[in-house]
Amino acid sequence: MKALKPLKKIGKQLGLRTPVLMATSPHYRRIRKLAQPIIANIRRDAVDRVHELHRDSTDGYTKYFHDLDWNIEYVVNEAIQADLVNVPPQRVLDIGCGPGYFLYALQQFGHDVVGLDVTDTEIFNDLVRELRLPRIVHRVEAFQAMPPTGEKFDVITALGIVFDMHRTPDIWGPKQWEFFLNDCRSRLRPGGRVFLRFNPATTQKFDFIRDDVAEMLRKMPGGKLSESKEIFLLTMPG
Ligand SMILES: C[S@@+](CC[C@H](N)C(=O)[O-])C[C@H]1O[C@@H](n2cnc3c(N)ncnc32)[C@H](O)[C@@H]1O
Image (cartoon, rainbow, N blue to C red):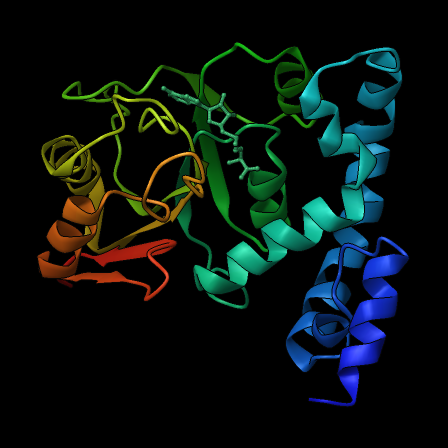
């Protein structure tokens, strides 16, 4: 470990996003191997074309073009964390799907997917359309059920969550989350799962979610909140 410290420092000076320690780990090598064909396919299918369309854009979301490798490795890692790699095909709903990279990666892993998002971001609209990803247009709001989908899902995911009024004074408390998770539950098949990754809440005095939300999630039957409070997994009875 100690020997890697100077290497990490050099990596930082060079501005490398992947810390050296991570780059040398078997987990990262697995991610890289899975990500490489997805990167090639997604470029060909849409990303290069949509990037060209937004060549002069100053939108912060152009970050989804600039470090494409990093973004695809991120969604591949999420798929691994959510146990969606090398498993039988699953029906997946991804809430706040953004550019659709996670949905696209899941399709490449053999799953049947649908996203849900608002249409506020042109870059995301263009990517989702060009990647031919099905998307439900809807704004998630506190104490309001999502629209009927007429089917049940094996897995419901939400990554980099913002719909919880992230970084605002109205950030969701336990009651809002309970309502949302009950809505998700009603859309899951027996044994189905919810996989959530919260956004860091650096402007507030807590990590990822409010302490009272963490307390409620820790007590929820079938739920598991990671120690860092970053990931929540809920499993329905089989
Ligand atoms: C930080 S981005 C994350 C995108 C993607 N899940 C990822 O991990 O790269 C947050 C996404 O949530 C969407 N979003 C924000 N508020 C929402 C709401 N109330 N209902 C549905 N989607 C929302 C945004 O449009 C955006 O696509």
